[in-house]
Every structure is written in C-alpha cells, then in structure tokens.
Image (cartoon, rainbow, N blue to C red; front, side, top):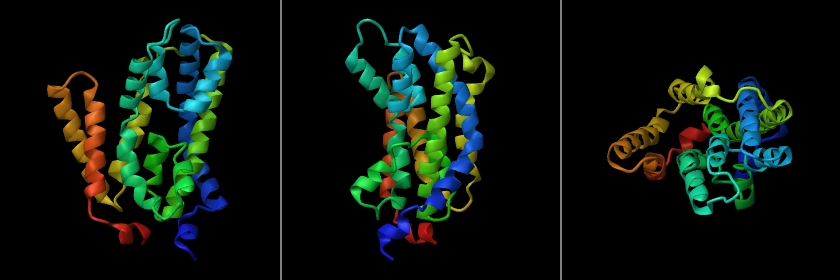
Length: 237
C-alpha cells in the first residue's frame, strides 16, 4: 500500500470523526445563533450573514469583523485583525503536519478547509494519521453544520442570546481544547510547542502593543513545532 493510501482516511474514519465531534458541536449552535443576531444588528442581511458563516467558518474572527462593519469598511485593519486572530493556525498546522506529509498538495490543503480548534484538538487524540484526518474532516463537517444551523436560528429569531460570554458560553471551546491537550498522554511532545507559544504570548502581552501576543505566540509555537525532532515513527505506531 502506498504512503498516500495509508494516510488517507476512509469513509468509516470520516463517519467516526463526525460521530465523535457531534456531541460537542451542539454547543456551537449557541455561538452561531449569537453571531446571527449580532450580524443582523450590525446591518448585514440574512443572506449575507449565512454566506459569511458558510464561507468563512471562523467564529472569533467573524465576531471581531462585525466591530468594523459599516457603510465604509476599513479593509486593511479588517485583514490585520482576522490574521491576528487566526494566527494560531500556524501552530496547529505545524503540530498536525506529520499526518499530512504523505498526501499530495491538493489533498493536504483540502483536508484543512474545516480546521478549527475543537476538531484539531480531538484529532490529536487519534492513533494513526488516517484516524486523525478522519476526525479532523468528519468532525469539521459536524462543526460546520451546527455552526450554520445556529447562524440560521439567529437570523430567523433575531433576538436570542446576544452576549454568550455573560453565561460563560464563550469559554466552552477553550476548556475543551485545554482538556484535549492535557488529557492526551500518548504524545506529551505536543506540549513543547504549546508551552513555547504560551511563554511567548505572555511576554508579548507584557512588553508589546495590544493583541500582538496572538501573532507572537502562534509564530513561536509554530517555529518550535517545526524544529522539533522527527517523531514520525511514534506517530504512525
């Protein structure tokens, strides 16, 4: 069997990933609903709101862009904020790369279309590259589906939860991500780039301008992840 086939998830892997992520993805409906409500309040139409959620699929970045939305949209600040918020994907991609290296470039990048914090964290608990990719893709479909359902509910009802942080709902994804990282005992090496990212981010919060810690932390963790010794044999075992 070729390396490409050995790393390619089967339909069973995708379905399994979808089922594993489905319970958590129910919470995403609340965030999607809140975004739908907030987007309408900022002047977006229902169609524009649904298209943004469907095509962008980046909750935190979408909420941030609403703060700059208006008759005149400042494009450069909008791009900078989106880049800063999503800079963590540099770290996530560096850590996940060993599961993608044997795929062709089109398949490699297509596998990352639905990458998010939750399905990435759960995928890292898999035991083989195929299983991890199945969780990443199948779980991503589950998250995208519930995100769209939530956004649709927000567009329909328009006056539901507008401040989920007051109920602590904005901490659900962060708590889940932390639990996945700390609870995965099979590969403690993953904590090395994350520790580097945390230390760099804390330093940036102390000495650099506001929000710089997002980019600095992601870059530091990503670089450490790329420089770590090749552990391919352990990952595939």
